[in-house]
Amino acid sequence: MTFFQVQNLSLSFGGLAALSDVSFEVDKGEIYAVIGPNGAGKTTLFNCISGLYRPDQGRIHFNDRRIDSEKPDRIARLGIGRTFQNIELFVHLNTMENILLGRHLFMRTGLFRGIFMWGRRSFAGKEEITHRRKVEEIIDFLNLQAVRDKPVGMLPYGTRKLVELGRSLAVEPDLLLLDEPCAGMTADEKQDLYFHIHDIRDILGTTIVLIEHDMNMVMDISNRILAVNFGKTITEGVPEMVQRHPDVLKAYLGED
View 1: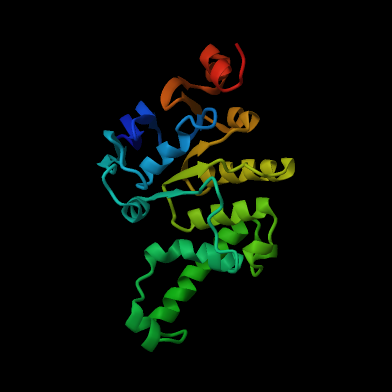
View 2: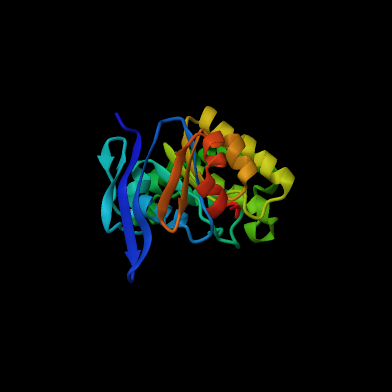
């Protein structure tokens, strides 16, 4: 059984090839990194996986199910969560409320039940309690207790990145896509995130695919790496091999 597979994925925008025949597989339990310079097609790849873009050619399989024609909400329900390069949070809502929004896929309370069946013993009330308990577990897991009730617009950038990570975990993903999770973080925040990513894999059992420019973190945390440039695959393999590849040094690290 193939856990996650991208086959010959291609996508163009007005004649500009953003992705060209990209293929790779991710095993369950892996931390898999995608690297490349700005404009290499990395986020476009994530947008295809999460259903925001539909590829021109190719296939995407998740748990032996083809998903490249599915809508984003359906893909999320199947067990794929993601974070974004630019933080997408509601700045006037607090940490608890932002993470709780990630539980909407599991909520069954409709308009009638929400308006007319209120109170802790009602269906809506019991559902609210259940989802808040799950969010409390995520807050504890990411050590966000100190900012639990603070509006996220008042939080440091690195902490907001963790809140977004928490919201993606609220979906209870089997596969988590992290788009530049370290961007804008301090050295200490990056170190904490390093341990959080390992815990997400080891404790929660979530497979991770990440885009990241911090090469030290990529080399330390990844089982395997896919290097891309101009929408095409340069190479794929274990970190030590990818790091030494001459085309990676030239395209990504600026070396000849």
